[in-house]
Amino acid sequence: MCGISGIVSHQPLTPEQRAAARRMNAALAHRGPDGEGMHEHLQAVIAMRRLSIIDLAGGWQPIYNEDRTLAVTCNGEIYNYVELRPGLEARGHRYSTDSDVDNVLHLYEEHGLDFVHHLRGMFAIALWDETRRRLVLARDRMGEKPLYLYEDGQTLYYASEMKALLKCGVISFDLDPQAVDDYFHYQYVPEPQTIVRGVRKLPAGHLLVVDVDPWHVREIRYWDMLDAEPLDADPVETLRGVLDEMAELVIRADVPVGVALSSGLDSSAVTALAVSKYPGTMHAFSVGYPGGLHNDERAGARALAEHLKIPFHDVELHTEDMVANFPDLAFDRDDPIADISGYGYYMVQKASRVAGIPVMLQGQGGDELFWGYDWVRAALAESQARQADDRPGLRNLWASREFVPPTGLSRAGLGPFVYGLGGLAPTWRRYRRRVAGPPGRLVFYDMARDYAQAIREVPGLYPPALRAALRSCPGRHFTLDRPWPPLPALFTKLIAQSYLLENGVAQGDRLGMASSIELRLPLLDYKLVETVIGLRKARPDHHLPPKHWFKEALRGALPDWVLERPKRGFEPPVRQWHAALFSAYGRNLQDGVLVQNEILSPAAAARLSAGPFPKTNAVPLSFKALTLEMWARRIQAQVP
Image (spheres, rainbow, N blue to C red):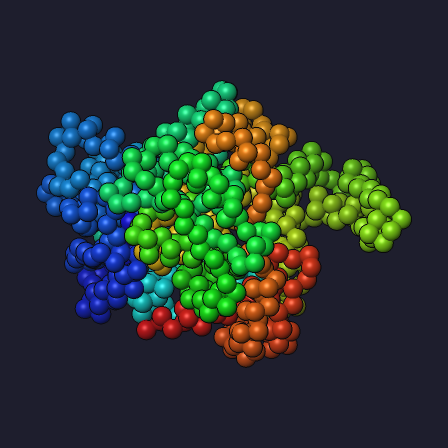
C-alpha cells in the first residue's frame, strides 16, 4: 500500500516540473510513511510513497524488469500474487523481489495492456514503458484505489489524492458548477468528475494509456460487472465457495491484520470468514457512544468477538471530540463527502494504528450487492413499471395509485391519511417518477428522500451566475439509452458505482490512509461481484428477503443469533452532533469560501448557517454546505 504520483509530457520535463513531482510525492507521505521512490525519464517521472505490507525488506518501488526497460509503482495489493508467480517464472521471468507488485511487470511483458485481466486485488498502477515511451495507468475494477488526473496541454499529472495533485502548481482552485450541483444532490460528486474544475478521476475498471511521441492519450474500459455471464447454479453453495476463497486471499500480509466490527451482518461476515483463515490472532475494533444509546453497537460486536475468541478494542466517540476533529475529517476525506458517520470510521482507523495493526478489513459492499437498502428495491420496482409502460395518461396514473388508509381515529392514525390526501399525493408523486424526464431515465436516486428534497430546494441556494452555468441535471447519472440491461443487475451496478464507490469506498480509503492504515474490503472482490451478477441474471433475487442469498451462504460460518439480528444502520447521534457542529462552525458559512466563490448566495448561506435539519432528512442541505465550506477552506490552502 502506498501513494503514487507523477508527470508525463510530450516535451522534456523542466526543472520546475520535476520539483512539482517531488512536491506531489511529499504530499502523500501519510499514505506511505515508510519511504519513497522515484523513476525519472526525460519526459516522465513516476513516484511513490511506501507503506510496507508485503516483502517488508525488499519490496521497494519503483520495481524494474530484468533489463530495466519497464518501471512500475503501485498503490494497493495484488491478492493473487502467490498464484501468479510460478507460471511466470516457468516462462523465464526473473523476480527481483518477493513483492506482489513484481508480477505486474512480467504480466505486462507477457500480455501487454491485457495484464490487468490477470490481477485480483485493489490497485492504482503507474507503469513506464521505456521502449514504447508510454505511460500506462490502471485502476482496479471496483475502484478501491483512487487516481486523480489533470491534463495541461500535452502534459498529464496524476496522483492518488486531490490534495497531492494540487501541489503540482498548475491547477487553479476553481469549483466546477456542475459538480457542485451534483454534490448538493448526492452528498458526494459521482466519478469521474471531481468538484475542482479540470480535475477528474480515472474511472474504476479503466486504463489510461499515454503515448509520448506522437502525443496520444486514450482511455480504455477493461471491465464492467454487467458483462458477467449468467450463472445458473445453486446460489448458496456457489457464493460460499467464492467467499471462502476470497477470505483466504485478502488476509495475506507480512504485518498484523485487524477488522472493523459492528453488530451488522456485513462486518460480522468478514470477521468470521477472515478469522477462520488467518494464521495469527486477528484483533477487532469497534466504536460506541457514551450513555448507552440505543444505536451503540459495541455489545453485539463484542459478543461475536468473544464467540470467535479474538481480542476486542472499542473507542467511545464523544461529541466534543467529534467537533474538534471535524476540520481535519473534512480535509482528510480528500473529496467533499457529507457523511457525518464517517467520524466513526476515522476513529477506528486511528485506534488500529495506535495498536500497531496497519491493515484493516471492513464489511462495505454487502448492502449494495445483496439488496440491503429498501429504497433501492423500491426504485427497481418503479423502474420495472416504467419499463413496462412509460406512456403518460390515465392508464399510467391508475397504475400508480397508492391508497393510504387511516390506521385509527387518533391524530397519529389520521395524520398520514390527511397529509397524503388519502393517497392522492403519493399517487401523483409515483406517477411523476414513472413518466418524468427523458425516456432513458430510470427511477433511482429520486426514491431517496434527501435527493428529492434537493431537487426542490437546491436551485434556491445558488446565485444567478451559478444557475446559468448549469447545463444538465443530476438525473443524467441514471439515464441510459434503451433497451436497458436486465434491471436487477443494472441496479446493483448503479448503487455500487454511486453511493458505495463515492461515499463508502472513497471515504474508507482516505480516512484509513490518513492514519497510514491499509483498508481492505473483501466483499468488493471482483470475482464475488461477478458471481452475484451472474447468479442474478439467471435467478433474479430481488423478490426474496433482504440479503437472503448472503445469509444462507453464511450459515455455519456465523451463529444464527447474528444472522437473525434485525438490520441496523451505522447511526451516530446525528442531531446532537449536527447541533454541536453548527454551534462551533455554522458562522463560517456567512461570507465564507462558498459565498466568495459565488457557490451560495449570501441569503442562502445565512439561512444554512443556522443549521436547519428537517425531520424528513438524513443529510440536510445545511450539513452538505458546512462540509463543503470546511473542505474548501483547507484544500484551497494546498495550491502553491
